[in-house]
Each structure stands twice: as C-alpha cells, then as structure tokens.
Length: 130
Image 1 (spheres, rainbow, N blue to C red):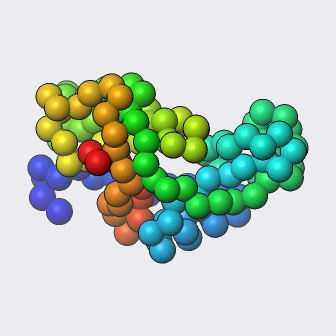
Image 2: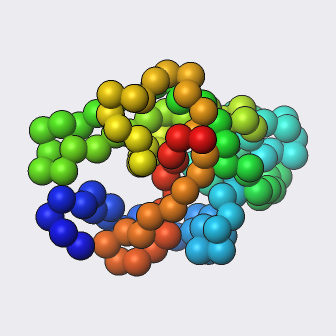
C-alpha cells in the first residue's frame, strides 16, 4: 500500500456482529429487520433500537441508495469522503465514498455497494457512484 492510498482500520467484530462481517467476506451486505415492528436497522445488533424487541432477523440488502449528506476530510495525509447514504431499504448508514472525484459528489446522487480491505484484511463495505 502506498502512502497515497486510504487506509481503513479493522472493525471490532463480536458475537453479535460476526454474521455481518462473515457475509461481507462473501460479498453480501446484511441488514437487520425487527419482526415485531417491521423496521430495518443498522448497525447490526440483536435488539431493535426502535421497539426493544429481540425478535430480529438478518436479510440481504441490494446495496443501493442515495447520498443524504457527505463530508470531505482534506486535512488528512490522504483526503477522503464519508457520507450518510440512505439505502433503498429505507435505513441511513454512515460509509466511505470511493471512486468519485470530490467535486462530483452530490446530495441525492445514486451510489452502490463496493468493497475495500482493512489494514488487517477484513472486507469492508464502501459505496461508489452508480
């Protein structure tokens, strides 16, 4: 890795989030849905943050959405863009944007799932134009 490439730290993987990280290794982006209130939530956790139910299930996301908001970190050694992306499933997630010049990033732009590797080799979900 050169000094001009963005480096991504390793995630904290625990028993609750392990299925999410294992699915990413297979190229699948999972979300959690509550069977009690039928709402989708992200970051993956076993208890629904909306109603407190423990009756949740994993399901596969299409990995497509729109940029809700974004920020560019230019003071870093390697500048990068982060964004809130509202997925087509309705949940908004924070993610990294890749593959787009900073001056072309727009609120409302369509994005799709992509992957990068962390410093330790874990597959990480990011989003790019599309």
